[in-house]
Length: 218
Image (cartoon, rainbow, N blue to C red):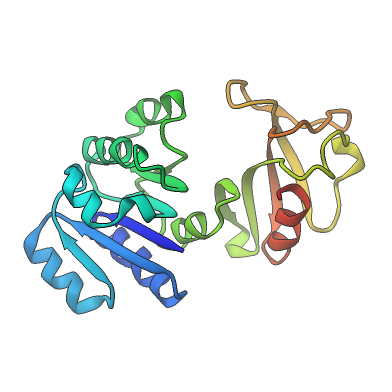
């Protein structure tokens, strides 16, 4: 997997380090020259000193080859503009940090960005969002023993089944349902029927994550 991270601050550095440890291919874009020099001493990866809102910088980072683009700076305007520019190159997923809660609606408008993460996010959480492209959103609970996640139902074996026929069980519990992204979330009830590409919220044991993803996604 190839990941481009814009922003070499504390969050960007730790995510890059974790991804590299996991044998992923990473490029960091950082605007501050002194920070770039520091990053080079800490990471065995490509560091590009430039602005993530500059088209040539994005192209030098081979954004057109990226599976994931992460905007991780502390500036919402920079994150938003860079994400929108990156979208033109069609990376597999765009993840953006939002530092001010009142800006979230701007980021989510028209589904321009795939995943929005709060300013307080931890690097481990972000790494999992990067590595699990089938997950729309994820929140770690119970000290890492379980995850609250959103995903799109794309496995044909699940289409047409009632939620009540699937859970609760020992691996997961479906708690929310979106028929599509334009609908508000509904509390899941046993008689709700899963439709193609509907979005469900579920509590999953961390040890059962791979099994559950295989059940509900292609």
